Image (tube, rainbow over all chains, first blue to last red; front, side):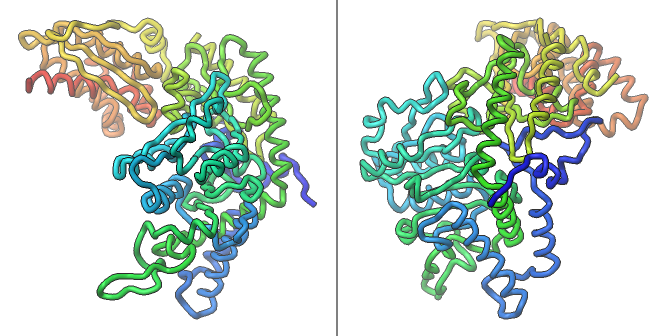
Length: 411
Length: 154
């Protein structure tokens, strides 16, 4: 049984008690980084106070405990995303960006050759574009883009054509700018239909609803701990065991080897060969606590809450600011999450965010590391508000009040 | 005055709404130089007409936030028609106000001198209370300095 009460979640997050510029903080930047419930912070403190040692090395008690904590986190994450091969498919990275770099430099560099196509989309974060361009520049692969339609969705009308020569489809499950949720299951089917694999950027989607890699039938999933109530510095690349086995190591060093001799080395088997050096152990403990916390809330409940907040915010933005604020994202709230990009008439996003800060409102101005998407819609930047499980309609109240002030100041 | 009101003074909003010296100059004789702020996407393009050691004319295009746009507008008004050494001195004084603000603010008398020399540009001093916005205010100035260096070496 799970229960969900956003007010209770809010009470669990220490940072939300802060005052900013004389007002209670209104945190609407969870799309950039979520806030941590006390359970996560305490789990990390407890780890350092009681269990810390390097993992996979010592034979003493705390070293065993640290290893158990580290591997326990891996198992919990595998179960959270329903990985068919369990913990052996979960590679720890620094964040989603590093996960994509690992994917491109290991799987990509060893599998793709000149002329092979990686199909991404125009709404990708730079993390799912730049590593492919780097690989293209090194090996001569082609990077192709699925266009975005005027209603802020993937334009799949020419998907069959786009899939020609494609070896990997790599798309986001939810846009960090538009809030659009993409039809990953459908894309997975199409990719597999032409013998390609599919990678998913789950950085945003992971905390906005349930993720089931078996049901989606995808091959890679990348996400970050700090966007799902966990700490910074820890991310995940999940890969099917059968694919993972074929991937060469990317970073070399301690912990990733089976043997090192004077004439060379033999990499370790399994996920260990992707985790060179001492990993961020406390961060995996924190991520484990975050997963436990999210499971306790119920990902379906979180998705329902996110949807309710999004419908409410879009409705009020449209009725209160018609003609003054353009919502850069789908107006249709089906397959759309709580990331709302705003283009305020006559006010630059940086100025919007600056005035909002005076009201204690935290939003993100900028291109959100999605410049091709910005260019597609003729924008240099937007001001983006994004919800977390602790967000309330009251946050939108303050957002609207502050937006009114920003418009009247520059109007 | 709150920090926010101090940041968005009327003179800044005025230059944002009605930027001075907007437009382009024929190149050559004018020199064209571009500046970008990759983090926020602000862009400024300056057209500099330098003759006989004088910045005879300056025009600009670009887009960005009120701070970057008003700063470039105020800058153009302050340096247009000035001898290059005066332009350089104004750039230095403005940059001091933005980057060396902590040291500058300790010595009130120096600040007075600086602000008098800066004239209307002093309206931008509210920016120093918002460290992430300093790069908005300095974009046009860095671009101008770069442009003048290019002119002097070409």
